[in-house]
Every structure is written in structure tokens, then in C-alpha cells.
Image (cartoon, rainbow over all chains, first blue to last red; front, side, top):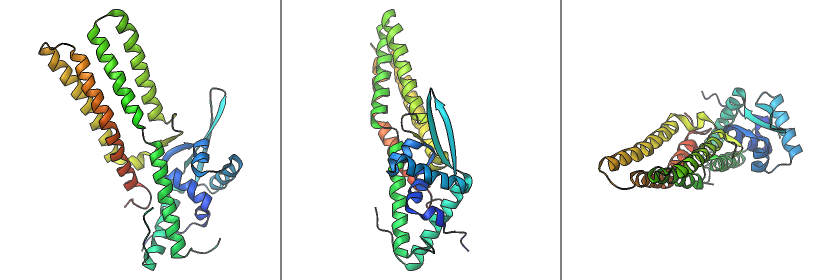
Length: 103
Length: 160
């Protein structure tokens, strides 16, 4: 039996974009994520906090010179949850016999 | 939203994940200009070495080396792009491709340089670095296409 697990927290569209992005990188700057997913600073901050509280994201704050630099990465738990969520989505699609249109 | 999505929504979410990850992978790949810039800096080093003029050697080589190190450091540590590629995504195949490419270019450049010098050809370092630089300028983008394919294959949902 497949260990897939649909994850309500990840599936919310904005968070799904953020987690998809973070799953493809080791870490990413706050500004990079904001620009890639087209969010305001406050909206991204809120979503990252939600993901951090769930244990899916680790936030790192540092200073480069005098400027604060915030970066984020998927935690081990976040990566595992995302993988299982993708598998759950694939199962849902697979069971229906539908196909994913090429993007 | 509660409950599992309908198949259409699940397919749409998967397509969205795919698009987002392709976009990010494209954003973190080393840009085409980097390869040409490093190739040009290599040729500058070769030409300076062949000139044998102290002033040229003292100015051109340090500047070119600093430029190469700075650009390469920015690419490796992600300072230029704001994100760093995950090692899991790159995988052994990706890492091996990078190492082989670097060794190929270095080996080609040094081999041609020493061969030309032994044969008494004029401007051996310039010719060797021009060939090595051209290999970088053309091979670099090819390597990036290969790494892109590897990373797309290793992303979530494709790993097995």
C-alpha cells in the first residue's frame, strides 16, 4: 500500500507554491521566494510562519554587513510531507484515469 | 478547504507544482553569460602569460583570477540568485557531470598548452586558453541543459 498522505496545510495554493519552490532548492532568500511566488512581504511572512509552526520550514535570519537577510528551507519533515502530498495527488489523478496536461 | 480534491483539481495542483519547480530550476541555473565571461578571463590569463611582460602579468592575471573566483563563488553559494540548488535535486549524476566537465576543460586547456609549447608553437597559452574558453562558452550552456534535465527528473513526484 502506498504511504501517500494528502496534506491540507500544504495544499492551500499559496503555500503549495512556496513549498514547491523550497522543495527544489537547498535554501532560498526571503526576497527570492517573494518574487517567485508574487507575494507581498507581509503575506509571505504570514505563510512562512504557518509553515514554520507546522515544522515544515526552517527560517534562518542573519546579517550580511548591516542588512538583515532572511532565508528559508524545507525541514526534513516538510520535505517528507511534500513528497507524500505529491504522491497523494498523483494517486487521486491516477485513480480517475485522468492525465496531466503538459504545462 | 476540507477533504480531498477532485481529480481535476489534483491534476491542476500537480501541473502548478511542475511549473513552479521548472521556474525555480531555471532561475537557479548558472546563466549563459557566466561561461563566456570565465572563458574570456581564461584567454586574458593565457595572453598575459604569453606576453611575458611583467606589468601585464602583474595586472591582468590577478584581475582575471579575482573575477573568476568572485563569479564562481557567487554561482556556487547562490549570492547572485538568492537560492541554492539542493544536493538531493542535483544527485550523483548531476555532481558527476559537473566534475567531468571541469576536468575535461582543464585537461583540454593544459594538454593543448603544454603540447604547443613542447612543439615550439608561438602563443601556446593564448591558443590553449582560447580553445578552453570556447569549450566553456559552448559547453557550459550544454551542461546546464543536462543538469536541468537531471534536476527535473529528481524533483518531488519523480523520485522513486
